[in-house]
Image (cartoon, rainbow, N blue to C red):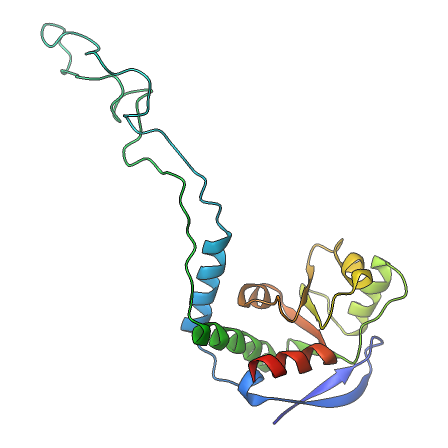
Length: 207
């Protein structure tokens, strides 16, 4: 079993926690992580781009000028792709970029991302994270106490509007629940801050 220090919001070590090696100590699979990130970005695409083909551009039924005698190359239509104002060759049309990964690959990617964070020392466990009122300044103080001066992802076991609202004005901080974390966000932020209760939930689901 892996061991990790547990901090309070003052930045003091108050306990140690055993972590499951099957979740936080697996061999990192870069290929699984890559596939998960590509899928996340692909699924986020709107796919609404559209342009007109030559069949959809108005006009083009008659020859723009006579076949011979003008000194110009012959043209049969004014809406060809090579014409100004003509249609687009192989024009993009609305489509879905979504694709799926199998469950085993998804789990491996998430475990790899978590193991990478733990192995790099960017994994911080808090005994609890509670605030009495919505106060961004107070939340910044907590981050400073645990020596988080870069971007971070804060993971909670259950929704806490006070924490979410206190953190959402900070451009480099994001919050998530244990059932909404994804590989892209884990890798995007430098630090992974998680409550002890959330760690237990993650281990329960992915062990």
